[in-house]
Length: 442
Ligand code: PLP
Image (cartoon, rainbow, N blue to C red):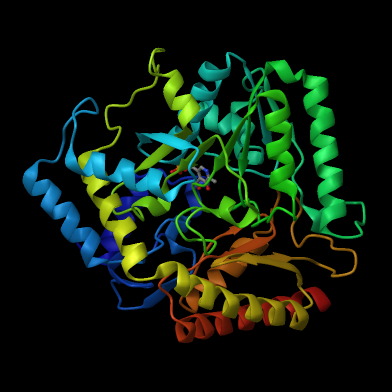
């Protein structure tokens, strides 16, 4: 098929996620390699969002491909009740990467069902029903995970599941109150959360679920001491602390798991994306030893036909080995610093940039109409003129592919990006932001 035929047939028969279907223009992709992919006309695009922030090791990693082939030669599928080498290996590798309080893994197909199963396990273990999560969060699109989600992608599920309670994020840039520093902000947010827990009845609350570093809602990095404060509330009331590491995990922030930056041990960790970098879909729920032990004599009422699919586990083993052997975390530490410097320069130089937030190779550029008032370039949940999609189109035309959310542009390239590649691409973002400066100042 030609690129044009593929595109036409795609538009005729596929429904695309989170979009009005009438005005789509998908790129027909012919090949991919490293941080790049190419369309059928030979145009090259740099994948500056690692697809959906999952392709951490970039396209075409031979080690992962070979591992999948080898597993396929042995067998493609054995149900979750069987002991399979790639499954045994991967579960141990995940537990070995996590803190010493963690005991076992339940593998899922992706991130949403990891969160679904995490909240089920927390409810079974605690015997409580309520689940806390934050407004500026995305935890998946299935019913339970969609109810955890706080941003507008949850709206089709409303009025939602009783007992799912939302609290505010430590989104300091947009907080109406000025804080003296990070510690003051933490003290405020933790006191408010404790108050809310108190009003909801701590004995009814099974879990507090948070993206360790909020991802698609704008790379919101917890202020100093915040996660420890959440941990303390959980400890005080026997609530499970669930860290959603689906996007932030596996090297994205420069650590294997983002919570390692903040010196806390969660009770439950959900993950997906970077464990296989999408070469085969896989997610999972890692639980503390105390939770794993509870299910020794209580039935784990969770199950999926494709839980711990052998092909996915084989891809996972190869992916985790690659992170280690190729010293990916060390690389992210270096390139992450360069990204941070470039973003700070961008913030200083551009009238349309209100804030930049970054950790490792995980960053967001927050666009405003006015730096002083911080008025967002587009209002929350609304962009009738397609201003943000216009920026994304301009970037794409110049070979820089990423996505936006509200008034933010996400920059999260594959962790294998070199400094030279990063500088070349960020110069393109700089050009496009210069055009936007002119729009808002004229
Ligand atoms: N949790 C977080 C933090 C995510 O970013 C996502 C997806 O972007 C999910 C959960 C859902 O994962 P999936 O799309 O694999 O179901």
